Image: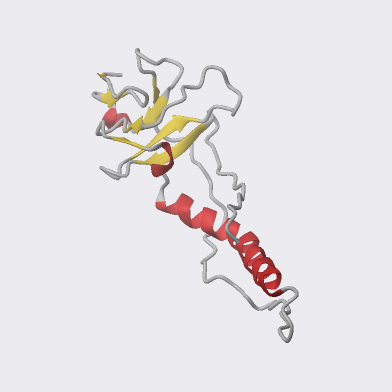
Length: 155
């Protein structure tokens, strides 16, 4: 089972198309605009800067705890199936060994229920990268950092 498996999980956006994020450094929340995969206006970056504290991290480092729990729960049935398939395939053709699926195999993952995304926070647009708007809490608009380059600006 040395191959990667990909399990698509859809996270909710607010009505303006923003996805909630949490900084791995300061643990404060904000939202970044969710571009469609083929959007030519989307910046392609190796790291993103926190709009709240300015510290950079890899694009896959910004999940909220609720998003992580939701993704684990949503992916669990597919992971369980992949484990069963891998065990069956590993012992296929081995004399004297018979593997039958264990229908009771379940990962110990809590089901957090459906995620929702409220329409909170205000939209701010970095002057340096206006195609990458952000949402921050009302009280955080005096100093915001650009997601792409980290430049500070006041909204």
